Length: 379
Image (cartoon, rainbow, N blue to C red; front, side):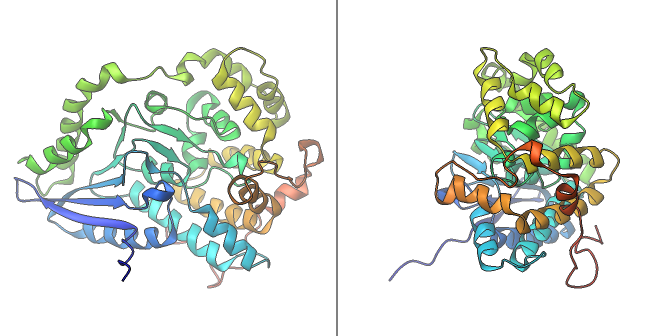
C-alpha cells in the first residue's frame, strides 16, 4: 500500500527557554524546488493568521525543504493547465484563486505583527521572492540565487514586485525586471531586499538558538530585537563567504543602460551591450529573447507603482496577471520553457516594433469580478 503523500507545507512549534514558542513553516515540495502551489498557499495563510493572534508565539520562521531552494517561484505549470482548460475571457477561475490568494498571503507577511524570519538560501525566484520580500528578517547565504525571470515566460514580476522593484534606487529594479538577471546574496543586501548574510551551513544552528533563547517575551518589538541580535551574532562568522555584488561592480554601466527616457531607448541600450562581462551579456540576451509585451508591461507597471501603496499595487497586479492569462504570451512562454522545452517561444506580437498602446492597455482592464468587487478590496 502506497504511503500517503506528504503535506506540501509542514508546521511545527518549538518551545523556547523563555516559555514562548517559535512557529516553523517548511515548504515541503523539494522535487519542484518548493514551487509555490495553491494548496501550499491555503495551508500557509491560515496558519500565519493563527500564529499572529496566538500570544504564545514569539516568532515565525519560513524556510524550504532541502538545500537547493527556498522557493523557485509560483507553480506556473498549474496556471498553464488552468489556461488550457479555460480559454474564455478573464477572470480564469482557477488562476483568479491562485493569484488573489497568493497576493493576500504576501501582503499578510508585509503587514505581520510579529517578527518573520525567511531563510532565503538556494534558489529564490518569482513567487519565492514574494514570500521573502515582506518578512521582517530576510536571510541570504552564499548559495542564494535570486531572480524575477518572468520576461522569459510572458508574465511580469508580480507578487508585489512592481512595488519593491520600483523603489530600488537608480532604476536597478527596472534592469532586474527587464532582464531576469540572477543576483546573489550580496546583491540582495545592496538593494535592501535582504537584511542578513549567514552561512548556509548555519541554518540548524540558528534554529537551535531560537529555541534556546530565554529572551523572548510577549512584546513584538522586544522579539524583533531579540531575533536581530541572534542573526547579527551569526552574521559575523559569514563575512568571508560573502560574494562580490554584480550590482555594485557594474553600477556605472547599469546606470548608463537604464538611463533612457523611453522603453525603446533602455531596451536598445541593454540588448546592444557588447562588453566582456558574462553576467551582463546574459542579461542582454535574456531581454532580447523575452516577451516584448512583458517588457512593455514592466515599464508601465513600475511607473505606476511609484505612487501607489502596497495594497494598491497588489490590486493592480491581480488585474494584469489575469489579463496575461487571457492573452497569448504567458501560455506560450510556459509552453516553450517548461512544457515542450523547445526554448522557442512565438511571442504575440513577435517584436517590440509591432506593439500598440491599445494592446498594452488591454492588460490593465479590470475583468468582471465574481462577487462584484475586487477580490483584494479589503487589503
